Length: 426
Image 1 (cartoon, helix red, strand yellow):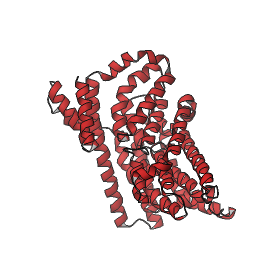
Image 2 (tube, rainbow, N blue to C red):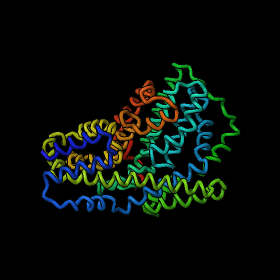
Image 3 (spheres, rainbow, N blue to C red):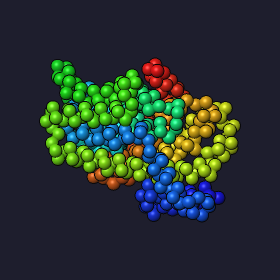
Image 4 (tube, rainbow, N blue to C red):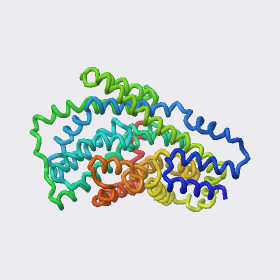
């Protein structure tokens, strides 16, 4: 009964447009007041406990590093480098959008940041070159979803903290490399097929002698993810320390190139602080919600009811992915992760699914939700940049979403696509 009231309260608050962080906290508060004999001081205590993690300190630093890299104009260099590699293929700017977003994802760690930073350049450029605005929105919003898959990923950090031992941040980061590349390939292929049907233009082939120069200009951006991944996997730094190094590198790059003014620095600090506050409030509220769900015994009850499924790890993964795909359409990915993962982990553990494999599958399922209505944040950002209604943007979205779901199915069927690199580097 208490779980039913909890869910009804949450759905009602969503319907009346209460912000997600407050909806989670209020629904948990009402449930505790009605059904639980615990002091309400437990709520702020659980909120504090949910954010009291050294690993979570990496989030504001990764956000700041991404902001600083964007302020020094690194997105322009990544787009030019991507244009030289794939711009000459049919639907060239669509390919550039995907390729540039892949590279920027390795800097930002955020789907929304990737969509906003790249979209304000790629979407107007595509529309100007004759691409349908809905195609531009679909290509950029789905490409931005790679921001939480390709390391460093904010959501992967949250998963590692939520899932407990067995899924380290370093393994999650490395495990996301091949899936991120597959997502990019799937999106490029989809864009190519649509572009051939619509006869969208190609970009002029860049002279071979210019490609090394453009690659050289993009190197400073591509060095940062190498610092992060190698530092963590080699055991030189922790996740949080690597995030601090990334900020230091971004500051140094801004000073050397003389493109980081005091005003840009203040803007970057403000934007990263705002994003951090939003994420951490959601994390804190979702932790209270998840605590109520766990206290009421929902995870253990589901594990008992679905114990027969534990004999088939594939079935467990497919069911979990389907649930997360649907939840990702309605909930912020951070909140969905913190609420759902504690409920699913007992069954995942019982079935013998590797927590890193499950984590990457879960993150990709939620990443797809970033580009799907009704609460796809990437879709809202890209539509706003294009100046079109979100309903009009849905025209070209389905093929890109289907392509990403195809990658998700592939990763479920072939776990080594996720686990090979982490095992190789252990």
